Image 1 (spheres, helix red, strand yellow):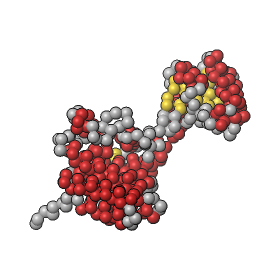
Image 2 (image 1 turned 120 degrees about the horizontal axis):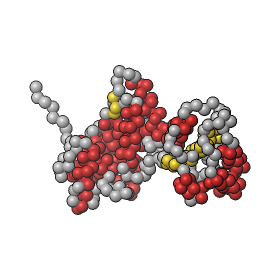
Image 3 (image 1 turned 90 degrees about the vertical axis):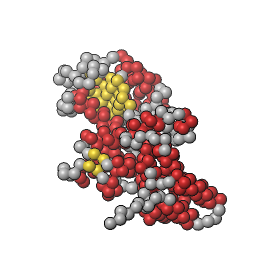
Image 4 (image 1 turned 45 degrees about the vertical axis):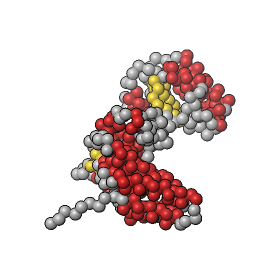
Length: 374
């Protein structure tokens, strides 16, 4: 049994995680023995305010009804949809139903009766949420905010944990691409990991780059990531192929430039500068810690997280690729990117040609590997 509380609430914008955790807790609370008589599960999907009112009424009735065979009873209001700030949630009829549920809970439940609420959205300005915060065991699972710098690191940690549960390990490049393709939703991450698990079978448990490319659908973010990787590796043909695909699908050249090419060039340049400070790259944690210990004057111009501190993740990913470029070459590439961006915005030059020329300049700046003499 999970604790001694009679009220539990699992909420958050990450629908997959909320449903997963609510089901896990329900099984723990019921001991996995839900015969349909002892416990009650009430679907919280409401089409309108009257439906929301009736759902609340059914929950109150269930909470006030003692277990038929005695013992403990769990009432689960599952996937409630009417607690958010929308037309249904703001309706007086809905608010009346929610208020009656709050009053029932505040009055106290009978011995052995437990209330479990799960919802992927809840208006945190209302009295019901404040009541839950004060009286229930609340767990919140929100999606990782991909508009914030450093989100890739958070997703990678989540993927590592879930992969470990399946006995999977990722090669670094495979992890980077998987994060960009699967995104931040745990349901999607779980689905793609299960596909990789089945694909690899029992003999091979390490996920490689080609496995991710083969099994995980290519999203816009994934294309952007792949363009950047091709540039870092000096693979002009691959970068041009991906860019042309995006242009043919209606993506603007300026969007491609500013979402992929410019960030890649900027990160290579910054990583090159950082590498010359002697910062360790043996692992990410050591790298991030050493960046934070740099003098303020050396850290101030590096990409920053909104919450504060250097956004080390993209720089860490660029460190090995930056070693294949000379500082002089990267400076020229930065200037070329600026001129290309200006050309896309202010001139009538063929956008495809502008991008192709820039790709050629970036990849040409990469030092050629020396061929060992025989």
